[in-house]
Amino acid sequence: MLASSFHSDPVTRCRQIIAQFFLDDPAATIVPIMGNEGFSGAQIYRIELGTRRYSLRCWPLDAPEFERLSGLHRLLELTWKLGVTQIAVPLRSRSGTTLLRVDEHLWHLEPWMPGTADFHQRPTRPRLGEAMRVLAHWHAAAQTFIPRSSELAWFASSPSAVSPGMQERWQAIRRYQENGDAIFRPKLANYADLEIKAYLVEIWKGFQALSSEVASNLAELGSATVALQPCLRDVWHDHLLFTGDQLTGLIDPGACRSDNVTTDLARLLGSLVEDDRAEWNFALDCYQKLRPLSLIEFKMLHAFDASGVVLSGMTWLDWLLVQQRSFTNRERVLERLQAIVRRLNNLAGRS
Image (cartoon, rainbow, N blue to C red; front, side, top):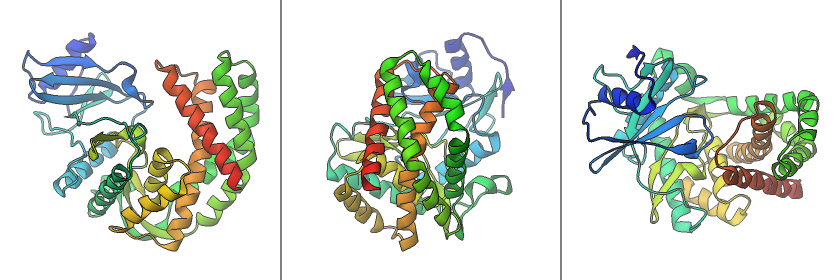
């Protein structure tokens, strides 16, 4: 792993970094992706060299540790070799590693995957079935991964264990129940953007109304034993790139960690089809052709979905009120908040 300090100019620094991956052609074009087109906080640059496209990612300082990212890259390489070519496999540098440390940040370079995250513009069943098929194949491939001892904490598989996600979500809801009012109420009162504030108020009300029932379900399932394996854990609409009806990119796997596969199914289906039960049933039928779910996994699936709705709203309250993050694309923020409020209202209607 290269540890160094490069030029302070971002584009020059990027050029020096990609040279470590054998891309030292002066004809390479470096295009910063403004606003990162997402909410992760990573800096992303598109590298163009002839007909080839690459993504150069600079992880934020609070990124996962080196051992976890290195293990993730080995996992992605395995799933690609086993036929899930929609995944981007990071390139190896001159030193043989997929990660470089420059100015305290970790960097990696990967192919720029083709396609567009446009499922909501064309929400067809062939596309939904394709997403389920690819996810099921990725799960099947990831289950065969053999982690090194330094990677066991994140990528181990087990035929019978408790879900860490179930327990962590219960703990997160309990913390917000105990401390949220003191933290959020005064900050909400003084929030300047009135349009965004209205959605944040609805999110806080929704949490107060729904959190007890959701936490109870999580507590009940938190001691259940199920199969665990590497899961993406943040597979949602904007991380699925389509070309026509084909899924050609499955991107941004940085949250990957071992859990039950239902955490991925809940995240993806809640994002793609929200609360359309007919589409949920169709999608799950497609998935189960490759990986059947048990009765307890069906219960966990719905608990993951409900807790995801409740906690996604709290994440935005924390980002906007406590951390005071700013986002370049205000319309995308509004879209996310609107979707969360919509799903909270639907969840309240089912309770």
